[in-house]
Image 1: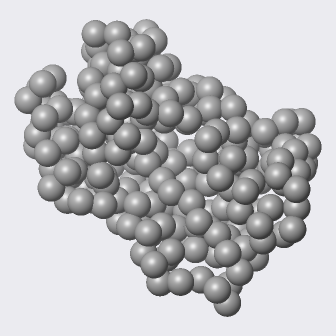
Image 2: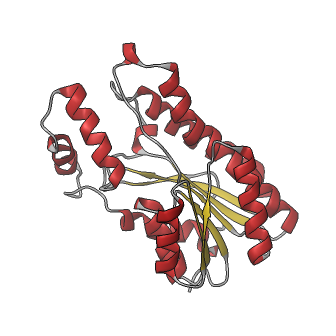
Amino acid sequence: MKLKDKVAIVTGGARGIGRAIAERYSAEGAKVVVADLLLDEADATARALGGSALALQLDVTQQPSIDAMVTRVVGHWGGIDILVNNAAVFDMGPLLEITSASYDKVFAVNVKGLLFSLQAVARQMVKQGRGGKIINLSSQAGRRGEPLVAVYCASKAAVISLTQSAGLSLIAHRINVNGISPGVVDTPMWDEVDALFARYEGRPPGEKKRLVGEAVPYGRMGLPEDHAGAAVFLASSDSDYVVAQTLNVDGGNWMS
């Protein structure tokens, strides 16, 4: 087991990629905190993982919620070894129709929430003095712009940049900060994305999802569990010499 007795927090851990990572971490021996705004779904995921899992409600846009999570986890298990910043939201629309409300919503979760979750956990890790691993979920959208997805792309580009800065800052404390950049992944979020593309591109429902899946060099959309191996690698001692990197896990969609 690569993560035996490690304490891992997975934000947005109730479903999708977050749940797949939580399940794999548990299988690798970690004590997993399923932290999500959707408490009922977080509870269901934690129950499925068994006694080594804890569900917590987390709103990453609220500092008191982040601080309460850290306090609760440290009180329950004595410390924190791993953080996966997976919580995210999506929105899209033509550039000339972007609203400040849409911008604020996306950046509040994808950038501000990620940064201050990272900061709070990193402070605890520094206090503990035993290092740690922080993994930020970006996206292939952070590698390039897209006409209808300007704000989301910018938020995920910011995640890559923050991963680099935090990685260089925290490695002196033996805290490795790295990222994962998924491509198109078959999750509940992509059903929402497909509906928005149908609206703005005049496509029938399901067509955009089918087309992007067919365009992946691997031959299909990603599945949540396709990302769990990279998440284990970046959380384990195997990645001790990997610093400030964002790994593309996208079936060959992007090369960098």
